[in-house]
Length: 31
Image: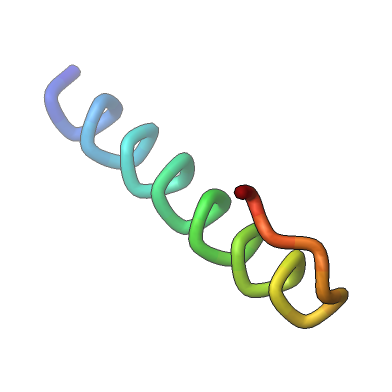
């Protein structure tokens, strides 16, 4: 169960990071 939670957290973290990178490349940041 702990491993599942760790993987779930990693997926969300990576998704947020990649999303920020994609938005910054498109010129529209989160701000």
